Image (cartoon, rainbow, N blue to C red; front, top):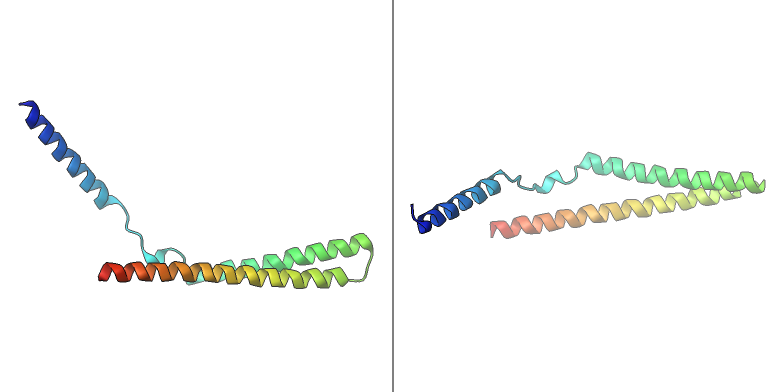
Length: 110
């Protein structure tokens, strides 16, 4: 075998290896990112955790200062607002991902 023949066979082998690697790579799916059930549970957890943290802070401050449950009500409402804000941010994030996936899918078809 000549040196040129060896180089040619080596380059062919490298091309076949690359083709095999590309064929084995998983293809991303647009719907595999996050399902509706996962999104719903994520939003429920965000809401409950916001309420629980606000309730805990308010209860702790009321116990510390010995006041009527004014801090409890105030921080529970703030926790509710924070939970809703985080839920809206999550929904916007998922919507942007779906829009980008739909646009990429449309570009592939064109």
